[in-house]
Length: 241
Image 1 (cartoon, rainbow, N blue to C red):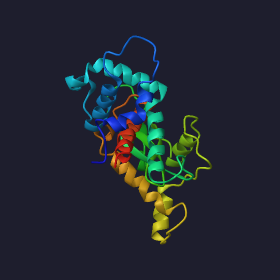
Image 2: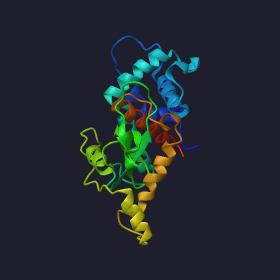
Image 3: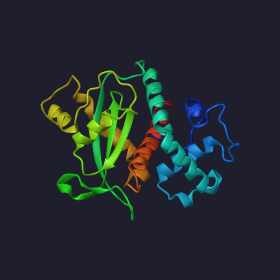
Image 4: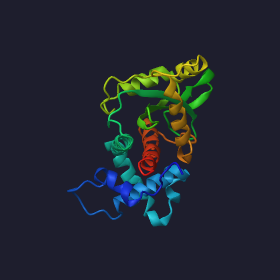
């Protein structure tokens, strides 16, 4: 099982202070923050609609409202960065990677109504979203981005690398999937090209999350956040194996 849709006690302790910070002001939470995190992981993994959220997770309206707050504050991105650093340390590596790889995926849109989806992809025939993923040498997602399908993969990758919310990376080396295929064809076995198959592997793992089967979101922020949710579920599993 390459994902976590219900965090164990050990997994929750790794990110608890991000989702439920100590000294938080305001009225006491009716639904525990951990329960809300599990609810969002469940929605991301199964792809169900908000209003069909099982009753044990609490009222879907409350979970949805908290989802919007966490999306705006970047909590899922912070959890993604922390878990990636933890997994790297478990593999006797420095918390911050010295090399990263980037790839993009064009996904059909599945939303009716206002949306940011535009034609793009091969031949401009796909009306949907372009997801961009930044992955380090172990195949761990470090950062994620989403935009309409119209921009070229290279343009989307550069926009992600310029994002100020990106974790601090010393001299990152972006590379494209086409370069990886060319390197494998030529028999390259070293340098910054050969491990790029790990980007494709990571994208395939995240593709098992039903919410990502298509893009059902109306905004780039939501599309990016669900990619981060899936990444957190994947990284939480990697941190526990």
